[in-house]
Length: 219
Picture 1 (tube, rainbow, N blue to C red):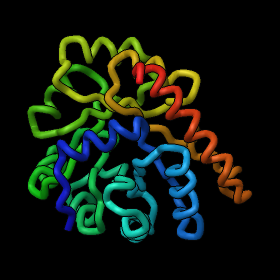
Picture 2 (cartoon, rainbow, N blue to C red):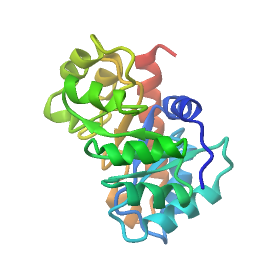
Picture 3 (tube, helix red, strand yellow):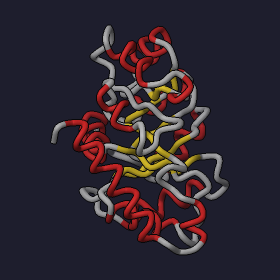
Picture 4 (tube, rainbow, N blue to C red):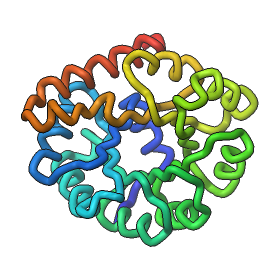
């Protein structure tokens, strides 16, 4: 069972700048991909629960890094049972596409950072008051950076993680709009490169993402 500290884990997510959404991760390549991302400066990995091997993959990736090197979590978590299974497998954070009160309560019970999906200020404050540590603004690209800024303005106490359609062309806009961290899937996890074993390409993309985020933050 995870013994994570949500506030510390939020700092680790923010330090990475981007959470790599490893949807469709494969047991044969997941460690190579995670290592490639790590070499590029991305140290937060989200393995989605819709993968039938998700719990095994979470455990495998978690075991492949020291705690100080990376943070591994579960994504696409829709119910409390899946949240608990992920935490038992070593997930240090739990992300959902929607706000489910049971998922938030389960993660709070076990001291695990939880980021439910929201789209509006009302949803964001409801999730936060229910115990969410981060509000995953999803799907971010449907509304754009201006929408994120509109949420962040009156609700600065809520860390925001825009996800969905984030790429190297717009990630700076989301950081400047108030994102604490962003989630990125296909833009940072090139399926063709992975299939070809071109992990250096994954590293280069990760390095570009982290550079742009650092520049946007003024680091």
